[in-house]
Length: 441
Image (cartoon, rainbow, N blue to C red):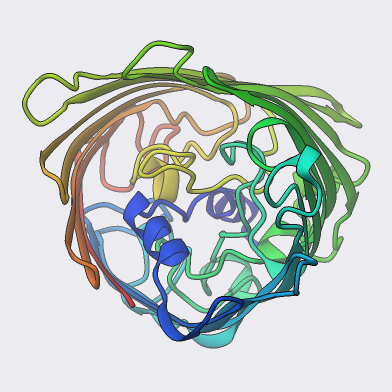
């Protein structure tokens, strides 16, 4: 196994626009409905064309490739005559990559597979426990997505490596960038208290993702949500990893403890948004920390309602990014479309300044520009991944069944592969382009 290549691939691969998340969660075709029963057909197709003029896997030239997946199945819920509501889903995903494979060498263009994605059952309490609010108890188990807070620690199991790393042993079947698969293999989740006031959760999950060393974790959250926002605590405990697939850093997940304090909301300021999280990991080798602070404001009285956001993020030298992933759109938490997916840094040993700007010239059209400044913290035994990146994108919701998102990224590293970096062919500006088409039903 090429360990340098593997660790880079481990932390990339999930940076699809928020439109995909909206589509996958909200779109379904109603098959049957009455007062107590709902049965839906779930269908989502996503296709992307990508091109990078430079590579980051040691090969010269650039890469052009295509990715796609179709998610399909059924979901529904059933009222239980005053005893809450049962719900569940069963979905498959068929995915593939074509062409050269991606610029980071995580796929080679020959990946194809079809597997079950979602397979879970759950129960919500409806109004059975008034003191806990509507659906104040929510129990679920099976194969499903689990997210804690804004996804800084645990967002999903969305890392989708192809046949590039480890001679193909970590292959999940294509669509590395689009991240076709998100669900944890086995989960049990208890949520208590709804979404207002004091509420919390207890979680057990196990990954079947070899790139995540098939990690098994327990976690808990405790939150308070009021008018000004949410303050929360998160605890994560590592139970087990598959030694066969674990990198040296991943072997430390056994008996790992992670604690975080987080918050988000408008703090009572109209049109403002704030968020932060401070997390620390207790490892056998010592302690690691990661944190971010973010502030944004929407100028609602101006034409196109421009939104400006600044965020600073810092990951210590050996921080384990765990199951972070796409949270609220481009740049969370894979920061920079080139850096976060192909070149690095990959959510460790780095400090990142980020400035984002978005406008809405039409209700169904968002235009945005995202700037990132990456600074490697410790360069003694690591690649120098100091760089700057500018991503310009659009999110166009054409109608209920078509979303189009083009993006152009300009990435310039301080170093190249000849003097301590990893961009092949000099440290000049790489032009990266992509077009993602989402078809939800």
